[in-house]
Length: 169
Image (tube, rainbow, N blue to C red; front, side, top):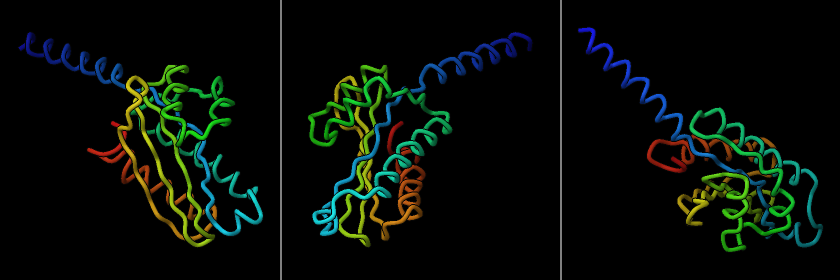
């Protein structure tokens, strides 16, 4: 009986070590706006949308850290290079930048604004070793407000990114 208990404890402790070691390190970059609206082409960038983009990145980092599945790395050392690039059109430079800060995964996001009524949010997860895209997810949403942007991100986190059998696992 004691031997069985010792084996059980050893296995339990071993599994704890394995699961802690299996936690992936992720770099979450700031979201980018793709503004194809008439307003964007005539009036240029809006301060409220720029603030929302920052909030999306911050919230995504918080959610991934709180999930216990990921270690979120600080992108500070590569932030200026990331902000100077179009991360969706640079041939995997996000993975290269993420690897420089010790991440296993890179996550980028976009919000496409067709109009103040029609918007779309996308998340992309890339493996930093191979630079391969391992997951992409999208949500359409209506209304250009703090609440609509926040709800779209929360839906993607809950139903795609962290959902069992989907997203970044």
